[in-house]
Length: 152
Image (tube, rainbow, N blue to C red; front, side, top):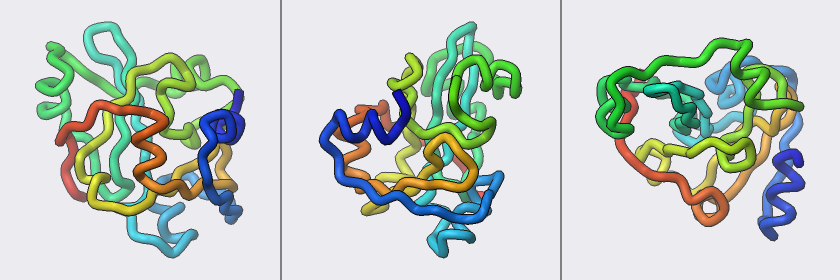
């Protein structure tokens, strides 16, 4: 099931946005002419042997010390591209949508995204994005919400 099928099954209203291929969340913010705080960037980490999807604004980076505390793990690190391709079949590397539940991963959302009315995120490809109301995202994904980022 792709992310649009997942959203349709959840009876969500969303907008598909097509753009030139982009390869970072900040590039997508620029391409879509929106602030980086509205772009939901998934970052996949492994902590004490378990995978987690961490969703944060494009203009932020993971504070690994804070994330270790939030996850209550002794070590946490970014996964490599090989692991990403195994975890996200059907997605282009770096274009994973922020729905860990769709891929069997727990989702952690940074509390900085709570300030936004909507989020925009890749749909699994580098040239398409989805705009979704934040309330809809929270309803569908039910992420754990914590502070674990630093503004770039």
